[in-house]
Amino acid sequence: MSTGNRLTDAPPRVENLAQMLQFQDKAVVSRMLVKNTGGSVTLFAFDAGEGLSEHTAPFDALVVGVEGRADIVVGGEHHALAAGETLLMPANVPHAINPLEPFKMLLVMLRNPADAPK
Image (cartoon, rainbow, N blue to C red; front, side, top):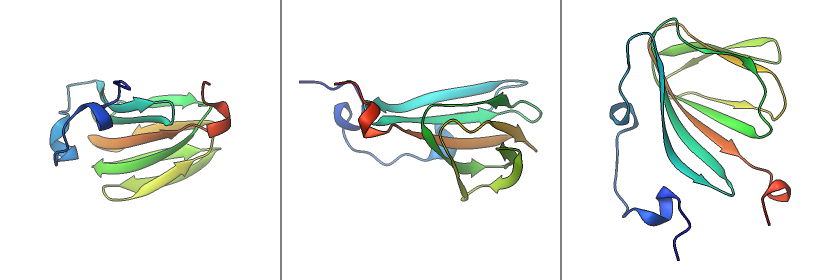
C-alpha cells in the first residue's frame, strides 16, 4: 500500500539540496520533497529581492538555510539566517522571508499529532 510520500515511495538515495532546485530570475520557486500526515518538507529558491510577505501558518516550521542569506522576521523580531543555520518558527506567529541575496532554504512543516486527520 502506497502512502503517497517520497520517503516511502522512492528508493533511498543521497541528493545535494543546493543542486535540487535552481534560482529563476525574479521568482520564488519551490519543490515539495515530502508530504504526509506528519507534515511536509519543501525546498525553496528565492531570487534576490523576492521573498514571502508576512503571513502565519497553523504548524511549527523549521527553516534550514541551504545557500545564501536572508532576513527572517518572526513575531516582529529579525533573524539573520545563512547556509547551515536553522530557525524555528512557532505556529500561528506572523513571519516573513526577506532574502538579502539569492537564497535557498528547506522548510520543514511539523503538524501537531493531535491535529492530524484520523
